[in-house]
Image (cartoon, rainbow, N blue to C red; front, side, top):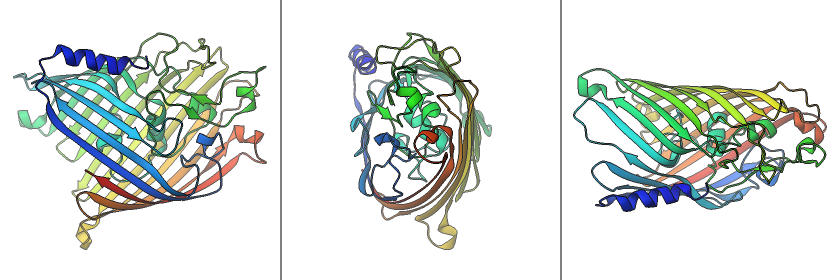
Length: 409
């Protein structure tokens, strides 16, 4: 599975009558980070932030290529680079898109390869970044870590302007492989808040919980490979987008990775049967104000009731451009998060319950069309049951300050 998407793209590209033209974008973001002294989960610590130390970090180096191959075919690739994590450089998306020219107002579209399901209300910029925040919500931090479509998505859409209606819609469905370990991080680390997207062949570490890593218990590693195929079964999701003019949009997704929770591979990586509902809303009451929210409800199962968890999270955010006050290039954004994992099994040596909330405020100033500076403060606090093995209580409280410069070319 590791090279299947690159191979698919190459084979399909060679079968098409190529007349390649398109564009390439690049983004580099460096951040000065000031955080508390908790070790990051990437260092197998108890912290829920991505950064391993204070100081200057390479938050993102992103190259996005979008090329037309023929009248109806295009190819998209996104390469990401970081100064942190196990895999410093790799691709997060690589897919072919087929949009045939049809006379009907209802248009088909097919995507084949590796890509994000379009369920986020906040990650709407190129490279699946947020235009408003340096760190994502708890929901989309997890999506960026553990969720990626490795397969095919088919959709039908209708643009309301074409039929002189205020309403536009899209329905879609997908089958995929390679998300069998999805649910690992929610259960054994809990929700986190950051903006690092896992790349293919990446590895995400977490706290080495004794009941997880001990040979006489679960005997699993303190890491997961998010896009690993374990049981050779297909997962699926379905979704609906509904938009009213340019003022409001609602998106609903149901996701089921259909993994066999009784399968474990030679590296002791378990398959997790993970399902969820996602509902998002974006609303523009005024041109300078955007309000967005998302709710996630799901469950995950590993083994014969070895790990059986419900999970849920929600956030509400708003971004306001201060042009009414004379500062057109200045945007203020705020977001409140809530998240929870409920442990339903009776395995006493592996407690999975966690809950918490976070508040984030961000200010972005566009110096030019190519350069912007952002500052962000975040407070994340909660309760995580498996911290009892590493500290005197199960509570945590984390603060993060970032000052970032972003160059877009």
